[in-house]
Image 1: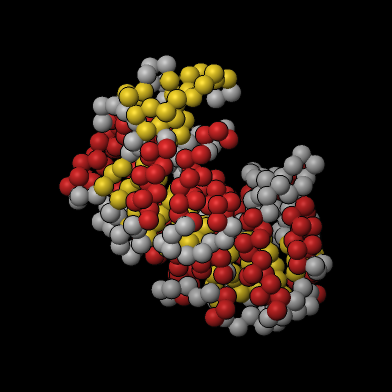
Image 2: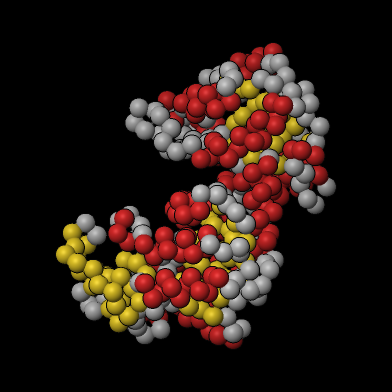
Length: 397
């Protein structure tokens, strides 16, 4: 059964528990270095304030391991959120207990309380029903706005649902599901771009799309591995030998279904390491000398991939084409981002690095969707059940 969005439930003057993912990077002195995860959930929080709800926000940060660690306190995030919303935020020193209950009781419509890091409590990671019940005591309605961690099993994502009669998802969660569903059932022709490392994981994604995809464009360590499996020479390039069997099987499955599996015509390669190399070379994709290492796709591959993207009606992209830690080897990824930005193709882009390139090239989403779901989004595309979504669905049935 479909889980309703927050807009489909009456939350006026109700106490609502919003589970978010504020697991953001912090500097050594406790400043938020990347606000993206906070910004994406603002529409849901603002809507709750406008509806005069009493808002309780909960998240984990880092790995608290069930112990208090002041370096992982959500207090810096509370300051950022308070500034963004231009409102005071109550911040108790715990996620459960008397202080939380008192603030929850005394809160007025439109006010916000941010709980301390959930991972400071052992019950969170253990999916403890006792801890989940204590979290739920101060609220009437549960809202999951933490899609990116909804593939996990935790008290605030799973067990907590047993203690609410009304559960729903936030606006960002809803966007993730709606757009990823368009990848699971795509308008054809459907082209997938896969790069980066984690080769076995990427091959599983490719396997899950074999009945729907028309073309797969491959870059990064993933491409190196396929080149090696097909008998090409990859020199000192990174490959994942543990994925050779799966890669061979995927190649055969694609051939049987007439799926175009496109490897780079040419690549950029270097002699030496990333931090100390004398020069770079553009070489045919499967003919890399023994002393060279592939670091990016070449100009011919960039042009070829761009032409194929222009013919697609749906595109999924996850993973960079090169080793983007070095700015010189971002050019292939940047070229594809620019090419995709020029099309009117519906596209979903997954992965922080890939999303950042796409935003830099386009500045707006257009017909595309920049997913912040990470591994959860990839799990959903593969058809895996998300435990948190299942837990909410069980309360609706």
